[in-house]
Length: 105
View 1 (tube, rainbow, N blue to C red):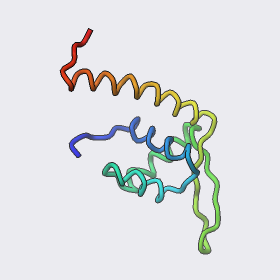
View 2 (tube, rainbow, N blue to C red):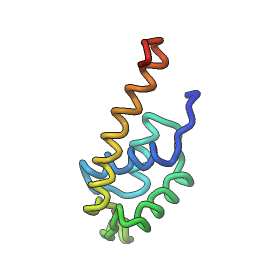
View 3 (tube, one colour):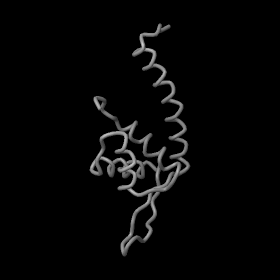
């Protein structure tokens, strides 16, 4: 894909996935990588930053003799996701207007 994905798009994708189900870093990376080129080395700093911003919380669950760290949305994360969705609709409409050659008022 020709487009680069900035932090806000990746944050939006992570929050959207976690709205459906809590998940762990590797699984989040795999789900997002089905649609865009992203690696674990990119994903974990995003998860840490979202947690530091209080948009995510973590908990550990045992899995095959070790702990797996799960991420879930906080109330602040739910609010940020709502804001991202509103902004995304405006952004998408503006880009579509420009790229489809529609009249811009």
